[in-house]
Image 1 (cartoon, rainbow, N blue to C red):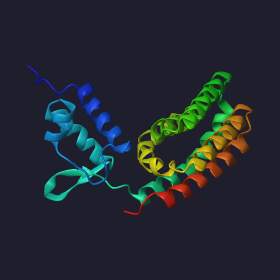
Image 2 (image 1 turned 90 degrees about the vertical axis):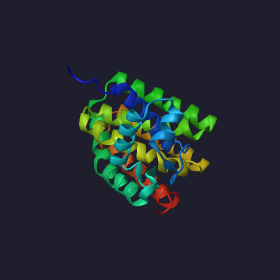
Image 3 (image 1 turned 180 degrees about the horizontal axis):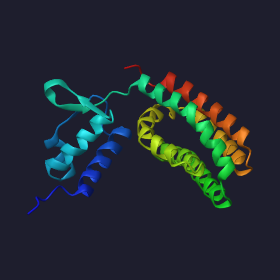
Image 4 (image 1 turned 120 degrees about the vertical axis):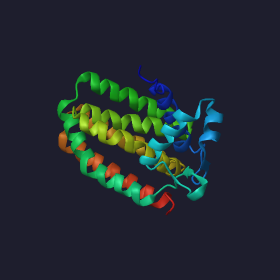
Length: 218
């Protein structure tokens, strides 16, 4: 008779809850995490929490705290810079491919995401703004029809969520982000591959500069 394993759904739920708490700033950098404490807060057993924490450690969201176990990893400016360097290499290509392959339905979805971003901008809450920004860029990856863009960036975006929480404190920058998104959407919708790539590259350079200024050094 086979042994019963932990329900994967429970591990996934624990992972997602802890990840969101880290990215949303509920769990602060340097905050100690113990299996017992997290399990108690989530009202689950220690086993799924342990698996979730080990996965988060592999992904650099938590790190060793010596004999004290684990803690929320500090935001690593160099690692964030690496992500932006990767994005500058692949996202203009994704935007050009999106302009080549996007359907009318894709364009309509992009306009809906843009409207959602504008609404989040009016409301002013950081969390929804970050979510809207992530959704827009994931739309560009998906519209490229290259699944590797989606798979590559999906996990890395959660590191950017942490950095963007600092960057989007500046209200003028928030407005600039969605103006640039609107320009990117227009280029993709009109099938202008060259413009889409150039606009995304400029957008990412602006974002990288803001992150460099706002993300504290480790």
